Amino acid sequence: MMEFRPIALYNVSYKIISKILVNRLKKHLSSIISDNQTAFIRGRMITDNNIIAHEVFHALKARKRQSKSYMALKTDITKAYDRLEWSFLKTTMEYMGFDDRWIQWIMTCVSSVSFSVLINGSPQGSITPERGIRQGDPMSPYLFILFAEVLSHMMKQADLKRHLQGIRISDQGPAITHLLFADDSLFFMLANDKSCKTIREILSLYEKVSGQAVNLRKSSISFGSRVKPQVKTRMRRILGIHNEGGQGKYLGLPEEIKKKKAEMFQYIVERVRSNPGME
Image 1 (cartoon, rainbow, N blue to C red):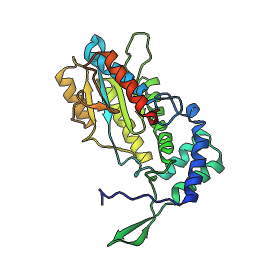
Image 2: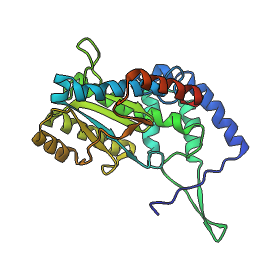
Image 3: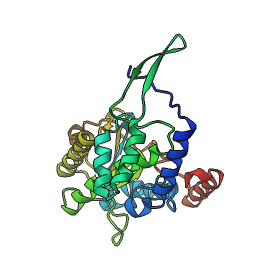
């Protein structure tokens, strides 16, 4: 059953209601969701994360302090939409200050789903889920980033308490601890035991309360070019992640810029122009 995916079917009434709620929600997301999240928010673009990520990976490779002491963690979420806990969604909206009536409307939409199993082309039985949001529902991406904002908040609190330390591209620049684009997540930290144990605890707690589980086999670590081999081995063991990145892609573009930056940025501009939905 692990590999089965439901086909989402909606009637016209539900589509209208969902779209109305989404249009009202979108107007307020920029004031609710932190700048680390760039997905589905007006005025933010996928290329914001691309450019920052490229600069950070360049620093990990070429800058003396960053290449010696820092690392990046790219995580993959297991069945992101299917595992979302409804109780956590309700609690999150209450914490963010949504009105009780609004929360009731959202939870009614989310919990109205039911499934049937097609056997020889005929639907049989009825399955009523207790968690998860629908694939293809206009509302689902926006509910998902409300969830992800909790993870972002946990990262910021850990940074404020100095339990982990983000990477700075320049001496005067801000410390970057994470970048989010829906369920595509990048985390940056010192390559030491304290930081790795902190991020492991954050991801474990986030999974416990939200249902979002990190797929360790598909996640990867990118170390600074001068991080010692024994440190790399210890960090992999603490996190339980043994794939090493640096040659993969982030949001469709290579993690490392091997061409001239001007050529890469021109490629990004052309990509945005040809895909307006990326905004």
